Image (cartoon, rainbow, N blue to C red; front, side, top):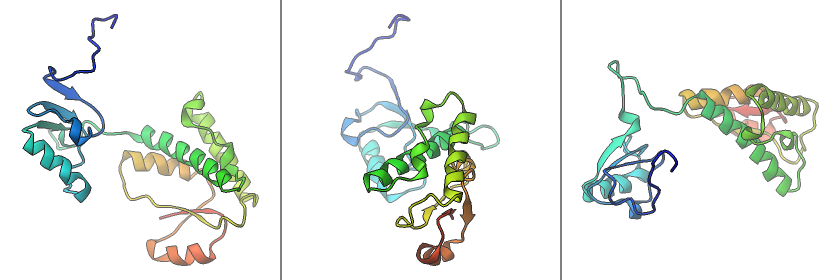
Length: 190
């Protein structure tokens, strides 16, 4: 506001509405231009209602996923740091979830990503957790903990960088059933 921005709830006068995630369909204003990650380009069923609504409301969509350079490479995307921070927060949340179920685990020693001064401190917390896992400090009642990474992009790579700080075993998808029944207490991922 000090720089002259107008802050208001009613954005119906705006010619361009910029966001990161998709807006709720009921909030989309007809005949406007929106820029956000719509996740509609892959024709995933969960996103088709949004696309249909945008078309009905005659909305112009600038989808960040389709913004590319002259070589066809995306110029707007979440980066590796989103994966790093996300995986640190997932591990923290896993510790809280296990605690709520009555299990004290090494994951309890991992804080939220924003609580660390730098990535090195966060990675050290994950390594400390991994050391405790390797020392057998995971409750046997939990069983193997398995993560599945389905992407190969920046976010997935960042998340995998963090998970690889734990004592992990890579397993193929066809091995997952056997690992879930007979696996050890190390972390595994497919």
